[in-house]
Amino acid sequence: MVQMNCIQPVLKVTNILKRGGLYPNSTLTKAQLVQLTFHFCYYLLIVISLLMNVMKAVKARNEVELNRIICVVVPIVNLMAKIVTILRNEKYVLSIVEDLTSNTFNRHAENLNDYIKLVYRISELMWKYYTLTIAAFLLITAVLPIMTNIEIIMIPPPFDFGKYDVIYKIIHLITGIYLGVSSICYDSLFMMLMAICVAQLYILSDRLINTFQDAKLSWRNKSNKAVDIKEMQIIKECIILHETINQ
Image 1 (cartoon, one colour):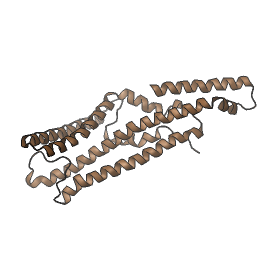
Image 2: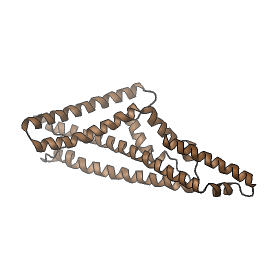
Image 3: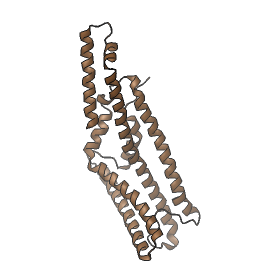
Image 4: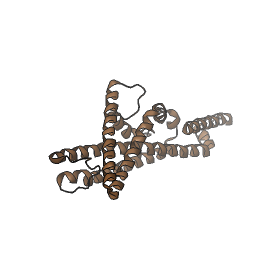
């Protein structure tokens, strides 16, 4: 049976973020600079639109509308904070992801790989759950307003678009998909990195508990000295793994 690499649970998410230009890179290319500029301008327009809605609700003294807009603002600001955090700490993030492919995280026995497989299954399940949730949300707040007269819209137009109202609703749908995919990717990335660390702690615990048995199994028909040397090697590997997890 092929052993699963620790990078597998986050591979789908990192690939999507790389294609979208929202994944940190040690060397910034012109294409990535253009992508980041586009993202910055897009988020700026979203924030301006939301602020205009807040001002309109305050001016009209519409507390219900103001509360609704604030409920939209909070998760969007939270998403922007995640993006800025990852991009500002690019070296640290890239170092963590690089560790997932290293021998330190993938040197364990095949029977301990079940922890990593469990994390991978959770990542797939979480991805499907998030996708269905976002799809249902967009169906109600972005698709239905285009097809019907229902006005349950996530980000109301900051001013009257008149006959171009349909265009705003289409842009609103694209924005919802854009924000939804970004949110799914970053939430999945953060959660999977934490889950992999927990899995590695379980692997570390199992290796320390079974150090002598593993050393004896690896050096069958060898002297006690050879078994002791192998045991010390396993302990050394566990110490390196523990230090890597803590970093």
